[in-house]
Image (cartoon, rainbow, N blue to C red; front, side):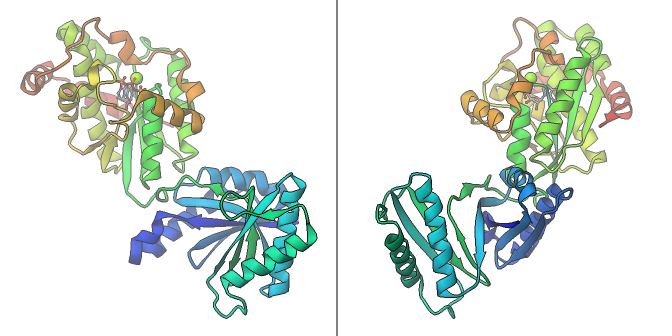
Length: 383
Ligand code: ATP
Ligand code: MG
């Protein structure tokens, strides 16, 4: 049998004349996610409709649960647009809830087709009366019902019960492209996800320091890029070997400065790479004062090496909230695998906590890292 999913589009309603563009991108994204299934996606009057065979339902539901730009979705019964057909479908929906133990229900109706002979209130009353007549142990409760049955009278009539929450935000691909600095930690995958929810399409870069860091660390980041890519419509990854840059910092700079200088070099390199990748900003998983390299002074120093704006969506977030998001996108289990990334091994025991911008800039320039950074970019591996 074929089923229908009714998909509610969110914040897009704020976008006025741009709305068709946002909706088109949304349709394109969902169609791409479903391209290997029998499902088809249609857009009509500010809603998306997905129809599919029963067998494709898990794939459709999985895609809808990962789609940025929708407020909610529900499996719906599509019925003929006449009062008897609508009421019959509503009673069937109530029956399904009664069978699973609901004692109270409420009917809500939206009627955009004003030519339908009953108004919203009359539809609610007629459907509720019909359901009460059939199930005498059920009651209507408009405040805290066990089940809400929704009726929508549009170009067709739809009846549905449980509505699942969507991710909200904006469709990926409506807000330009950014380059995500993706490490093997918990934070940066979440940062990429958050930018995707604002409509940004991301590419990722990982700075690898083989043989100081293991190949497992690199594989872990590749895995993370796939996990985040499920929400970001793919996440192409560049792996840049930073071994020589790290060595140079280690040899030439004071131990306490290593972390800040390495971060400055990463920003420097990432902002150059972003030009090749046609990215308009950098994205990091930095969170204020979470670790020594993320004091406001040190973030100022690292950010100063980027020629592009640096977006830090986690800057004011609590670690536990970040972890909850990491779990919700399925990244956490991978992020906590114990392979150290390059920064951990080079971390001095007492790093500079409040680097002075001028001093940091002067030390950084004195290291003359540009040739090594250029070499690293040219040797970047693409995944
Ligand atoms: P994460 O959990 O994202 O690794 P973190 O709490 O470990 O973050 P840092 O190690 O200070 O914090 O890194 C801050 C940010 O710098 C990261 O969120 C990431 O965006 C970037 N970053 C750090 N190391 C790397 C790396 N090896 N490759 C790419 N980006 C990196
Ligand atoms: Mg890290």
